[in-house]
Image 1 (cartoon, rainbow, N blue to C red):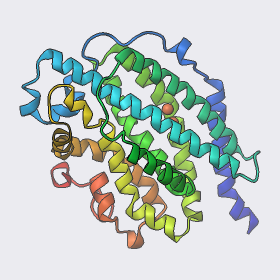
Image 2 (image 1 turned 90 degrees about the horizontal axis):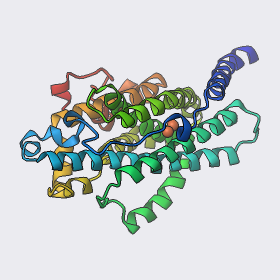
Image 3 (image 1 turned 90 degrees about the vertical axis):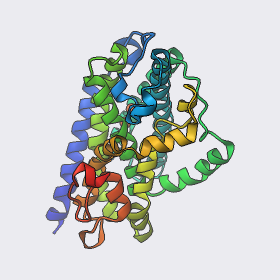
Image 4 (image 1 turned 60 degrees about the vertical axis):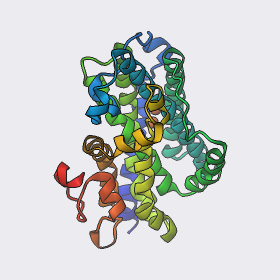
Length: 317
Ligand SMILES: [Fe+2]
Ligand SMILES: [Fe+2]
């Protein structure tokens, strides 16, 4: 009995130790290993701008407005990245505080991951000083910050829920950075940053995917309910706000109306499905949904039917 119970957990621990070894063998310091500056032009190509999915509006922009928009959209993504990594580090710190056994390989990897995130965040802050985004984020309001201070500790107290939040915050930029790094017209510095960040985030994603099954197995009914019915809303919110509404105001467009219109386009919806679809896999593998039926929120988030099968993009949109 002990052997069958111990075997899978040992495998997870061995895999986590391998991730720690990989982090240890490849320590990159961005101030040394990712030098350089973002260029003065349009840092992201047209196709990678959210507004491109509203072609009638996009066609009215001058080259200078496209340059501004690209820098502001990228600035919003980077700012979100720094704040997200801080939330992640706060959650991981609390996780370590509550661990009875600090010699658990999970703790060592959490420390490796936090080390990597502080380096990422320093690099992102450097990018912000170069990009100098000016858009005011309408979501950055005292009432919402206060709400955040109440909600985040609540989410951090639920390991499986927090793991899902971490996966959302890592899957979304992963897709955006993949597209940016593969496009020939992306600013060379942004390409280099995307490549560097993605290779370390691949380990973080692997770690979170390893942990989720055991966290789901240990989760109580409230946490399971929230993951089934609230997790998709958090993931969609993460995707939709990575470029905040204020960005559109910098090129003379209405902020909220443009943001809402952009996020309803088939192109943006398809991109959301592509970004969030991998998030559904750990839930399906953990058999998280009653009767195998994917709730509506998750179907909308990932573009799948009630059995978790991918829908054709037109039907999903
Ligand atoms: Fe990161
Ligand atoms: Fe990460």
